[in-house]
Length: 220
Ligand code: AP5
Image 1: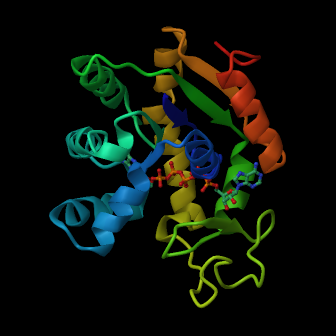
Image 2: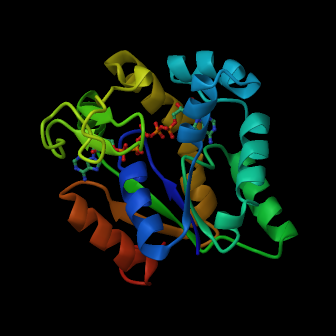
């Protein structure tokens, strides 16, 4: 299974992608997480990416494509993967198709999750994550047991992402509309898009996603 999760910031790509990857026994590849790790470790990639990420802008295609090329060749991704946050531009999507074709592989499809902007801003202002295992919580919809620490790492305090400040979220939504939304037509026109409503309880969204992937309603 090789699947992409597409959609605006805060729509639930990471949340649903994590569950899908575990259920199907495939690697979850999140370019956002890989970049945040690189920033934290102050690698050359991290230094090049930090300023753009903090401002809510995309990192250059050539940096990301190389990163994904290497990551998808690692042993845990050889049988398939769930891509969260990549591709994000048409050139990235073209590069992904080309790199898979070189390996005689292809994408099964792309899940497009959708939700209104106001809901996305509300979700991101309430998002907290565990710095150790990256588990994501939400003060309104999915709080940790004590509201401050990770359920799986009870001594670790949850933290908020720097780019979840409201002004930066608005920039990220604008960047999504301009640079990433064209991918919807790119994948729809080649019959590879599954459209899934990203609002409602997590379970309901996940069930709709699985139904769409299994050939039910939503295939576009
Ligand atoms: P990235 O980390 O990919 O951020 P994003 O795409 O903006 O997406 P998010 O992680 O913010 O949201 P999500 O959709 O995963 O939502 P989540 O499941 O967490 O990228 C960060 C930056 O890295 C980019 O801005 C860019 O600079 C750079 N970058 C990354 N990839 C790149 C690329 N390919 N090219 C160039 N640059 C790149 O959910 C959000 C919250 O909502 C959580 O609190 C969750 O609990 C809650 N929630 C989820 N679902 C529901 C629901 N159904 N109901 C209520 N609450 C819900």
